[in-house]
Length: 301
Length: 111
Image 1 (cartoon, rainbow over the protein chains, first blue to last red):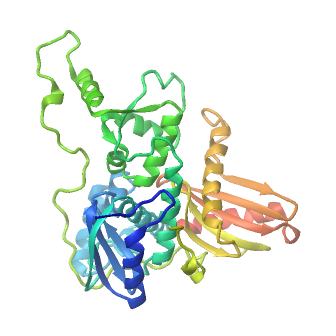
Image 2 (image 1 turned 120 degrees about the vertical axis):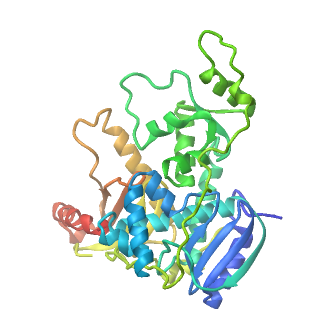
């Protein structure tokens, strides 16, 4: 097993694997086994999509954030599947999201997926050539060097943050929110869900935000005294306290019940019909893609 | 980009400090600088005070002897929003006009 993360931002075996795939101009999937592991979809050597149980993908980001409605998504999906067209085209044609905004979301989702993979462990990886089979790929994809440089930056930033773990469960600090206090940047939504049972990663899935962005926000809120980490035992006590009848009833402790991983990825998945790889144009056309100047820049090993 | 004197431009995701797109003459340390821009936006928003009586933050201008940095905040429909950052040569620009031009270009970025 290889731990991919180091505090100086080294991304270890992922760099090696992606470099090989990019050099070969591969189209297919790079399967990463480990914790959390996942699949990196590659088109012509560029990263088109990343699937991992450790980070929300584009669909979750759009739906859980309510940027796109469930019914609207289903209709667009059905239309794209029926016509053999592209999901991205359907979403933008129906004016559910701008093409530029969708590209922004896909690029940040890619970076988040890569960050999560690099922050975990890699047991092994395997390249499987074939068509790109993903509902919302970025096309053309992102340069691996650019993604890895961003991943290294994120790891270094978090390494400098106290209480940075994405797996520590958090709870709202007692009395932290005063009447009339304004909480911006989605802090109120995080506080509402910080019940001692969720970690930053769980909040990211629940709210449709990136894992890295949520970890940063949680770290800031901890520093501001709005959130505190709880141990597993304290989390149980907190959850039981919330649900215990005020008059001291004789209901069993809720914390003794089996736990379900709330808001974890999973459940029935829509099957994307392989065909032409969906693509989006480059609506952020005011700016050209990051140039090859990034090719030589990398993380400090 | 149709703004006189532009040296470089970038789109920065405010929630993460990630450079989504960039173009121009910026150096290799721009990844770090972009993250600082995101922090700057966060601080500026906080400085507007509770309730933001004057409205939400729209633009940050940083002016030095040789440069003008214009950071236009695009709608926070996703996360904390997107920053359109433009680095302009001060000797070649009318600051007010540049701000107007950047503001006019901004909606097209997300369309």
